[in-house]
Image 1 (cartoon, helix red, strand yellow):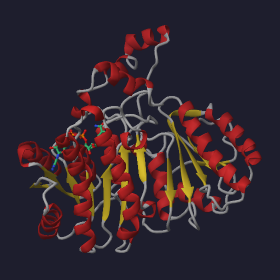
Image 2 (cartoon, rainbow, N blue to C red; image 1 turned 180 degrees about the vertical axis):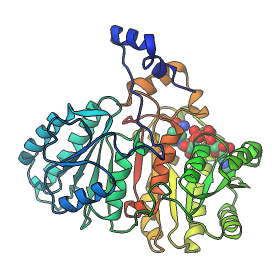
Image 3 (cartoon, rainbow, N blue to C red; image 1 turned 30 degrees about the horizontal axis):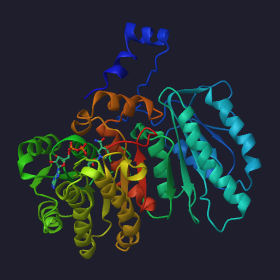
Image 4 (cartoon, rainbow, N blue to C red; image 1 turned 30 degrees about the vertical axis):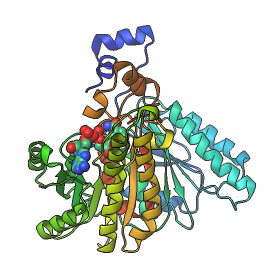
Length: 445
Ligand code: NAD
């Protein structure tokens, strides 16, 4: 499953050869470790905004070396672009050119994060133009970054400010190695809801989390990541996967529940297990999913119906049970896919189910918020798992090397890190959103 090409072009003699031949060289990504620094160098803040000083103070309290307007000769680990007060596209020039100059000082694995406002239909045309223009510029910048550095953005909706809990949560997520495979994406802060953790090393301390499809692949990695972040984990999978499930549960000190998520009583059994065994239910990750690919012309009812049943209908049914129980502060994170956004040949059924997840999440946000909860989704692109190892080598190489601007597939841990963040209290104000974890690609299972 490992990407051997990435290893070859990044080590010893073969690295030199690849350089000589001018072969594309996917960078090693900067991933999270509990003891790794938040950024690999000082952070430069460009632009002005009402709460800029407060933001700088917070970043200093995170242990960062914060520079305002000019970094001198220093190398940089991060750049924050304050663009939320611009009102005309002509005002972009100075900041974007200063950003361009600062890009040359970025170290590998650096982060650029913009702060802007959403472009709305009732904005002044020039205001909407600059705001939507920032979206285009940042997505393009994401494609120009090198050395595993990324560019993402925070959008402040309504009256939210850059120092609201979920804006700061999003900023930390984008800075840290947790967002290694997230590039060219935006998180919109919709409300002031949420709370930053007391201890950033254990943001899920004291929480009880359920992960479906946890016996292998992305689900197993989600279970490991949530446990590392302090959660007590309940691992759910099919009875046939019982042995593998028990193995992962032992690794993470969790409990198991053998269950087909399409069962009518799945929601009730999950709730019952979490509440009786662990005393609460704080986070549900709807990860169980299947593919049954066929061109639509050759599709049979069994393939279509099973994908809809597992990937979306089961989630709708379970969510109804959780909502009816009014579990306080329940967070739900669901697995969508870039196929549900961009479409993928041979995957009409899968894309219907994953597009369905995105729609469900958007429409359920207000319902979960009534009890202080939230629902979000992650849309992975090409992730190196048993599922994608079956894809023919040619297609796999294109999916890894050519399509994403980070020139590689993601790892299960990259999806798990995004879920850990979206499932934490720091992300409550991001309710209803789907975040792509795709290395800035738009194809994949
Ligand atoms: P996987 O096939 O390796 O693992 C899926 C797990 O879900 C398995 O353990 C399986 O037993 C379990 N499962 C399937 N049906 C179930 C049911 N009815 N009840 C309970 N458990 C069930 O898949 P993966 O690659 O780890 O994918 C995990 C999720 O991520 C899926 O929702 C998938 O659609 C999504 N996803 C994966 C990729 C990728 O590139 N691998 C990309 C986008 C989205």
